[in-house]
Image (cartoon, rainbow, N blue to C red):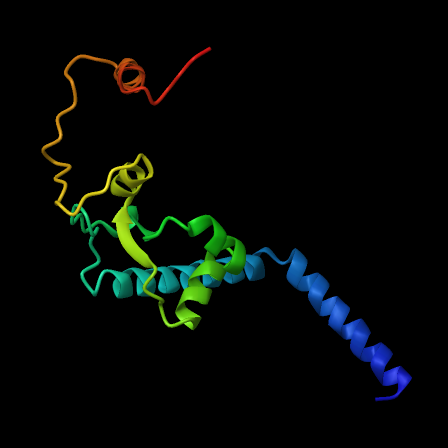
Length: 153
């Protein structure tokens, strides 16, 4: 490619890139495609790690909106630092053949695990009773103070 052809190519290329950066329709289509690809990767990972059931391993809740991937050995921070987060994380585990280091938990069970709970017994969130006529903040504060999980100076 001679220099005049290269300049022409670069001029056309930059004009096209400028149009793509400023064209809202193009950006919207691009973002929709990225979100769709992320959801496909997420659903494939959830399906694999839940053995096709798409349920929480602890409580069995089938709502895909609240399911998440949990590192069984609690080494998620180091794993995410190695492979990245979000779509990059999902691509990396798919590329690695879905290594057996993850499990599917709902957000509630994942948080319980974070607090130190370990259970193989199913948790039934529909039978957990909230205290009547008590504000959520008062209940949470009382629970944290009585359990020793919170301390104030």
